[in-house]
Length: 143
View (cartoon, rainbow, N blue to C red):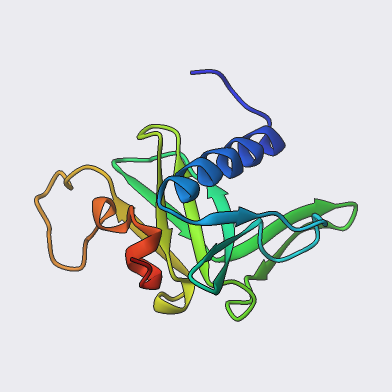
């Protein structure tokens, strides 16, 4: 697999999300700034949904998304929790499955883990199957 710079990964995630969201019947709008808390806005039936897009590689059969921003500068590494009131949905693009998964951050704590393959120990309780998070339309109630 080709290694991507972090910015390239983010751009690929947004492109994949754009195609997936349009394929589900939404119009996709892009903010005119890189400083908005969301990357795209999905629109359908008179309603707007702010989406933040994350590129996440699968690890040990799962995808984990932390609801935070991390950046580096001369003073070191900084972490800031995502303002969950500023976004409606997080779209997670996974290159191993070439699929987008949609989660409402307000439904979860500081992070969420989606299983893309069954766990090795067969655990099912408390496991979130990624296949159940493929539809933005179902998450936001769009027909």
